[in-house]
Amino acid sequence: MFPIGKIFQKINGSFEDILKLVKKITEYFLKLHWKSPRVVLSIVLACIFIFSGGYYLSQTTSAVNIIVNGQELGYVSSKSEAKKLVEEVLSAQAKDLEVEVQTEDEIIYKSIRVPKEEYQENLIQTSALLAAITPYIEGSGLKVNDKIIAVLPNDQAIEEVLSKFIEYQSKPSETNNVISTEIEEKVEKTKVKVNPQELKTIQETLDMLIQGDITVSDYRVEQDDSLWLIARKNNMLTDEILTANPNLSEDSILQLGQVIQLSRMEPFLTVISKGERVVSETIPFDVETKRDNSLGYGKSVVKQAGKDGEKEVTYSYVEENGKLLEKTVIQEKVTIEPVKQVVAEGPARPIAVAYSSSRGSGRVPGLIWPIKGRINSYYGYRNGEFHTGLDIDGDTGQPYVAAAPGKVIIAGWGGNYGYTILIDHGNGVTTRYAHSSKLAVYAGQQVDQGQVIGYVGSTGRSSGPHVHLEVMTNNKTLNPLNHL
Image (cartoon, rainbow, N blue to C red; front, top):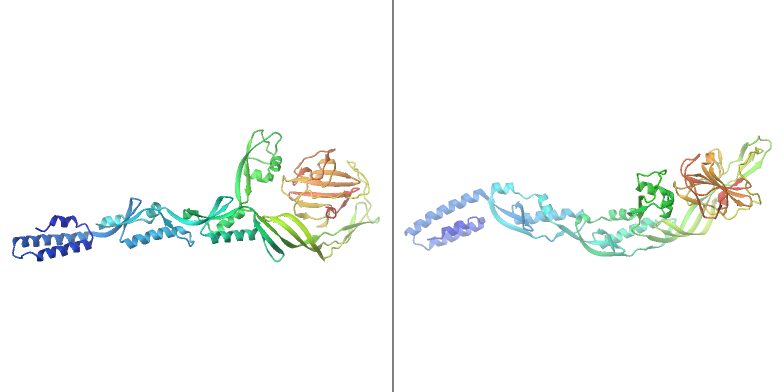
């Protein structure tokens, strides 16, 4: 008898398996004598088998079950389709970068036949496959001082990022001849396996380097601390502390032991660049005052309008991330001569003076800048009014220093000047610092050159935070730029 039981045990195989079975049945029948009862029974059983097989084939379909790490995820029609689907899921993780995405998961493609209804109900979902597979790429890590700060597709991408960052910080141009650049930190490239989502593009990495690393630390308030003093201790601005502590304001009273946040931006990389730069600088015009007794008390008339000049200055420099560290003037060339402003003044109206300053020859000592910043307004006539000093830009709460040693003769409110300091340097020379937010000295105090005396503000008649600096000899203002 032909082994019918074994046939039906294999009926769940593929269509090719069933054809092989039919072939075996045919070969078996050919060996038997066609008139024997055994042949007749075998033919009947074969017909039953073929009918059952045909019915089975009509109700089922061949499929491939995708199994990831032992988990059955669903069906696709063929093994080639299954492999293609896995490749597409992996490739989709590449973030449009030319990198090969791989996986170390165990993926099995199992060929089976299943009822058609079951097949339709369990078609594999891309989302399920994506969730089950753990992808990785072999990228190139940008290591700074032994810490990986970004992973890019390859070494060439890191080299391009570094080149762009150096160019951003050094800013070479027709007027800026960059002679050399150097990154201070130890920079390395290392191979690393990461999830494709951790991979950064060249632009993303460059933006990160430019922005810097934000670090936050706690500071415990000490005796006599104030916001500006804490800022000074930590080489920060008051505004930076206020930004990190939205519950505080300039007028907040700090408690001993109170903990506040110090948030600062630290660069990932430091570029030291050396070169020569050519810039155009303003030559402020001088003001010549002539007495004209025909004018009334306190009256003045501009006889000749002043005009600033220009000069072309060539200097060598050393910069750190674009911040000037050293500057040496190589050459100066006047391109436009300044025009002196001539002013006729009537007799001065006698006024009472609330302070007593020294008198003398008026020889001005070597003055230093009270604060580093751009000049917002120069000495001389501006917009129809005579500006008696320099307005130097700054941030509220930023400390400024005495331009020369001397004695404080005024420290307090000065009307339009706001909070004001007046220092007598002897020999008839005084300097005034106006629009302060707070003062750090008192009248009668002796101060040294470079000593912090006040903090930038916008008090009095002011359009924004700055230091208004005046230089006077025997109570007559001079152009500060001629003495700094």
